[in-house]
Image (cartoon, rainbow, N blue to C red; front, side, top):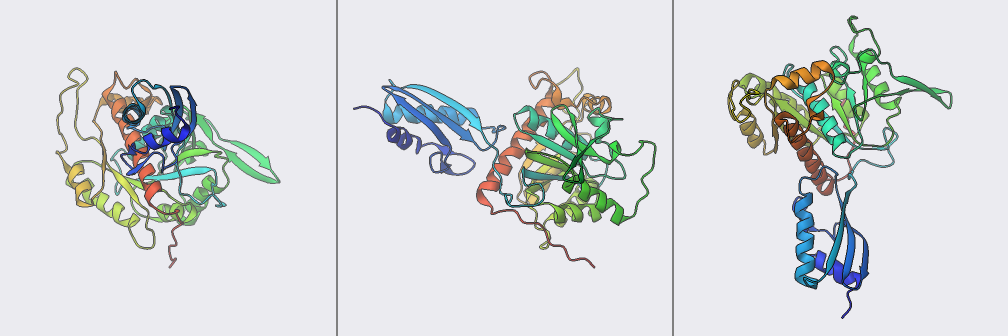
Length: 369
């Protein structure tokens, strides 16, 4: 009996996406089925190019086809991806951006900008279209970390209105106040001026089509955070901390802000930065300088995934100072690069799960006093 497309679909109904808990056919992840005799080809469209389970899903497809249609079937499987989104497509603000991620912390000095930059680069190197906004108006560090100090964003006139064109660096689009003022100049602005500038970064900038836009937030829980979540539909937030209790205490406050009823931004997970020190000459050794397990306990306390435990390594700092972030390095040769790429896959995974299970994102409505 000759095979047909329905036979292939019925076989693939036995393959589940482990994250989403449904089979690939129900999730509409199977495309372009072609059957010629005993030769079968099809495409599996995953929910993110950074999917950590890609090879496992492919093996499960091969197993299902052979079990249900016979071992003599010759298979040609193409694995591709389209990043999912639950942002309302009718938005007036950033309608072409699929997901917006806040990277936040309760205090400064935990490496939040380092996490933001390397996360953005890792996502881009895994096939996504990525942008990053440096929302730390008073202490912008992204231009240095991405090697674009001194570069200025372009300006384009469209229908009698001027729009900012972000700078491109290492495959991502970037905008920072550090690109608009002299780096030696102190920015002494009151809150309304800061929030106005940030709104322009979002509403008056030509970001184009992006899978992920990362917002590198300043420390604390103030005007900037409220402005951003009121201006754009945020997909989720990542909380960055270090292992010691003083950082964790402030991280709890940052997390609590996103969970306020009037804000209600989903938390994608926890990142523990500077988890352990690993000397270059002893890459297998781990020294827990700031304590051990704080991030894991923090994540468990709030029933959140621990997205990464990032090492404290000199090359991470050097990469940021030199404008060549560590995530640009070969993951097979550098443990820190590998850690950030694992973080990117975990973040993409959590966003895909969130988009599959949660309704359309809405803008927070925060009452002004």
